[in-house]
Image 1: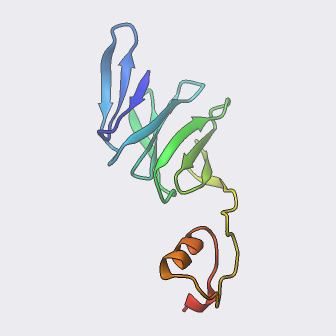
Image 2: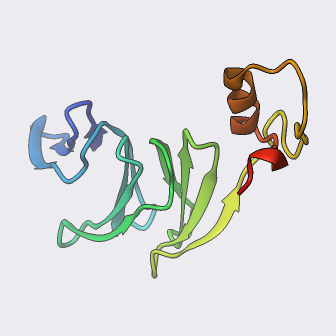
Image 3: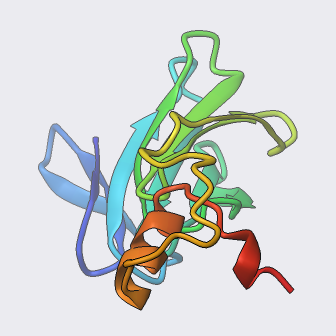
Length: 145
């Protein structure tokens, strides 16, 4: 069994002895999610440091640090064939990774509430409101350089 923790670690546990077999400290923030691959060869950990780490369970070595998310990685999961890893982040994306190479080959994202809404020249918006709308997908061409 594996568990993630707020102390920036995740641990492997022996379920017969209830003892920690190994503690991993490579993440720099919470470890929100850990997942074993169905074929038993890999373990993935997703953390508050915006990274996913892919581990070889035979050697217990990190084989890839996947760092394309821009915010906390909340969950990781393998497909049944163990060749694709999915990660979901607070950044609003789900990324699909090729386990063999560590390459991200797809980014899934639902449109944000104001996606592509043009607020150029909009009157009556405070600076904070304008910034919030841009964060939610609006565009303001007057602020482009």
